[in-house]
Image 1: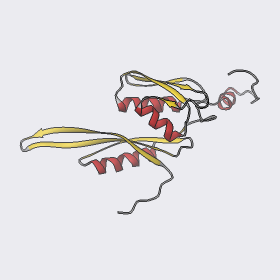
Image 2: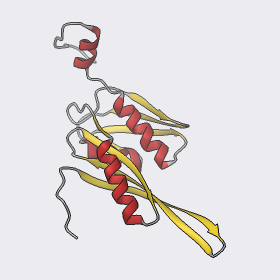
Image 3: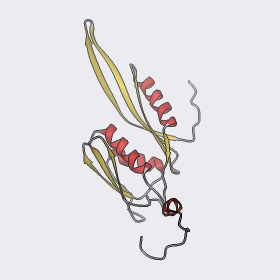
Image 4: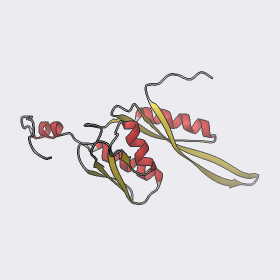
Length: 165
């Protein structure tokens, strides 16, 4: 089987196995959570479900390619602090200074690294379900705005800031 070369790096976060009992025994199905990223501000997430693990992973990759988002990365970190939410999961994402690294749980760390973020702090609040945490991180990343974008939305002239932000 030949593999196509992709500009995106992929990371499989977890595989969930579910079963249903029938008269002849149990039937298993699998759900795979996959993250794709180019380490340059673009990242995507997908969940694929199938009767076999490799098929579920391929489906998840295809879904992740469709659900790509752009993350504003400034000097290796995010522009401002934000809380992403999904269901009962909340994730606090904070910018960090150079040399800090990505201090986060498994899911936020994987997503941040594939997005190209090298310095960031995060804290998972509420439910720590991996799927919901992943959606919460994506919610936070979608709502990030750079200072330039905010000024453009407000209709103000973009100028260099001279103080602490």
